[in-house]
Every structure is written in C-alpha cells, then in structure tokens.
Amino acid sequence: MDEALDDLLDLLRLERVEEDIFRGRSRSAVVPRVFGGQVAAQALAAAGRTVPEGPDGPVAHSLHAYFLRMGDPDAPIVYTVDRIRDGRSFTARRVVAVQHGKPIFHLSASFQRYEDGLDHQAVMPSVPDPETLPTAEESLPRYADRFTGPDVVDRLLEARAAVDLRYVGAPPYATAGEPREPRSRVWFRANGKLPDDPRLHLCLATYVSDMTLLDPVLLAHGRGGWTTGDVVGASLDHAMWFHRPFRADEWLLYDQESPSSWGGRGLGQARIWTRDGRLAVSVVQEGVIRVPK
Image (tube, rainbow, N blue to C red; front, top):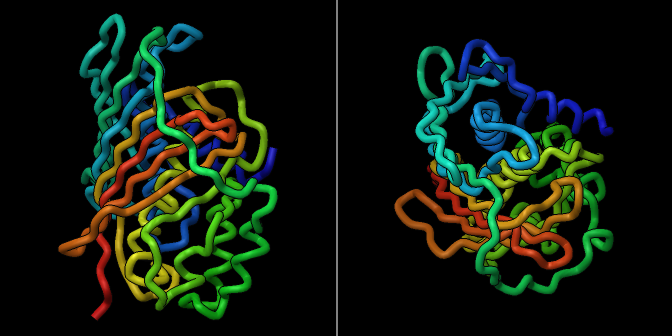
C-alpha cells in the first residue's frame, strides 16, 4: 500500500478515549488549517464505530454537516458521538468535533440496513478515460508560476498524495482570468488497494469530496482559487447521500457544477459515478468565497 494512503487510513483509525468519545490527529494541508474533508471523514468514522458491524450491519446513506471554526492542525480533535436512534432499519448519530474546548464541526449521519427497493438513476456523462489524463505530478508543475509561493506545488502534491486525482478539463488555476462554464469533472481513486470494509470506502469518498467541489464557482468568475490568492474562502456546510455501493480504490468520476454564488457564498453540487456508470453518491456544499480587497 502507498505510504501516503496508509497515513490517511491511520487518520481514520481513531483512538477510543471513552464510550462514544474518540480522538483523532491531523495531517498537513495546503493551507494552515485542518482540511475539512479530513474532519468530515473522521466524524463519519467515529459515528460508524458506534453502529453494529458485520455483513448485515447498517451502512451510512447520508450525512449533513456544518464547519463551525477553523481547525488547528497541531492539536488533536475529540469526537463525541450521540446515539440519537437505533431502529430496525435506520440508525441515526450526531457527532461534535471539539478542539481547545470549542466545537469546530458538527455532523449528523443516518445509517441503513440493506433492503430491496425501486431502482432508477440518471445517465452518467461521457468523459475521457482517466488513464488518458495527466496525473497531478505531471500537471501541477506547469502552473508553479501562478501560485502564491514556490512551495505550493510540493504542498499540493503532499496533501493529495494518498489520492490519484485527475482533472478532465483545465483546473481553475490554469485559466485564471477567463470565466468558464461553472462545471468541473475529475476522476479519483485511492492510491492503493483498500480493505473490503464498505464504511471505509464511504469515509475515503467523504475525504475527497471536499477537495474540488467549489471549483465550479471559481470557474464561473475566472478565479484561480486559494493557491493563487485571488480568492479566500472555506467550506460552510456539506451534505452527501450514498446511493449505491462503490469502492474508493477504483476510478470514480466526480461531476461538479455550481448553480449560484451570491453574498460571499458559493454553492457546489455534484454526483459521483462508478466507472461502469452507476450513480454512487450525490454531494452538495456551500462555502464562503471572498475576493480580497
């Protein structure tokens, strides 16, 4: 297994401090705060630790979360799980992440035991195969002169080393100054083989879902993003619906768009597809996006 991926999985192996209380650590991020996807993935992992395990155990089908304060990457995060409901079909959990005595993140998650039901879905868009697209190691150095410092490329590569993420089109920083259609598509998968635990694959997808979801907002206004310094921002809230089983170590298409931005906030919405065309996840996020004065 890739060393960076093993380190990411280690982040999700939370320490049990007490019944329904867990502690997690952080890893380096591009900006000097805890990466939001990490907190969301750890909170979902904490909630999952309080739900019955096994092949017939419930699996998360949705989560709704709010980012309350910036996280300190140099301090542990304590996750307290509240067992809201344990039903025959559905199980509900509430998780609060705390640092320095203050809540920084709040998550509600619902889990469901498998059952048969009606089945339909939208049609996956047609895009190039991921193998035909450049890797981050191949593409990022081309834009080094557009970032805010000489070490940004290295920090981006380090932050995304556990995940192979490839843009179908040009990323925002490649076309800064040129407004484009507010749509962005990326292929992604874990950089190595994962265990067969479906809850782990949900956590990995949750982690990645916060990486690029606001890119379409930037594209609509010709902004390069946080690494170019022409906007500042952060995630506000995040919601995911897990429709069908998937593996995060196999290629997934993240199809993202933005229907609106206004009042210093931008909305991103997306669908995650398996390579064979199954709709696996729906995602919506709103974030603060401000233009520096």
